[in-house]
Length: 156
Image 1 (cartoon, rainbow, N blue to C red):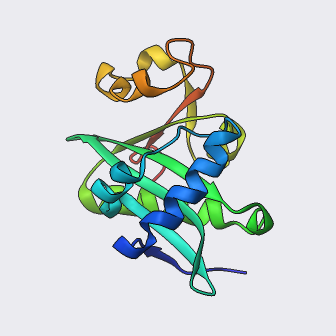
Image 2 (image 1 turned 180 degrees about the vertical axis):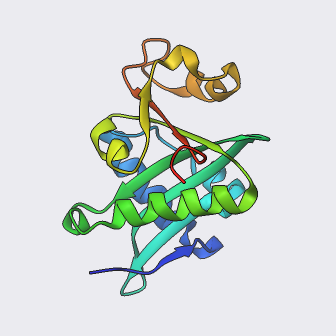
């Protein structure tokens, strides 16, 4: 069943915050303060069901040719419905529309992103610019996430 992926509205911020931090509490994603979600609300895509946000992801632009997919979260009872795939696809489409050719992610689910066209890379291959928020992570500096990159020209 295909759900409609939409750009987040300001009224979605508290639900995005609750959803992302639910998975952050389980150690699956980086926690996000509500203020950061408000400041970056334009980065977010959501899937709503019954007026409730059941899935979200963000595309954050880092540089002229680089963006990150982050804060991908799907309510547990809505997992295995391809909502994550649809959200990643929306992020990659927006990156393409912006002219950004390289998109990366840091994740505990490399297999999922691999199925979306991302390739596993060594974290040292990522530009230093991407590590700006890592100092807030409780696992810093011993990051145990996998780094993956999507190159638009290779996946066209």
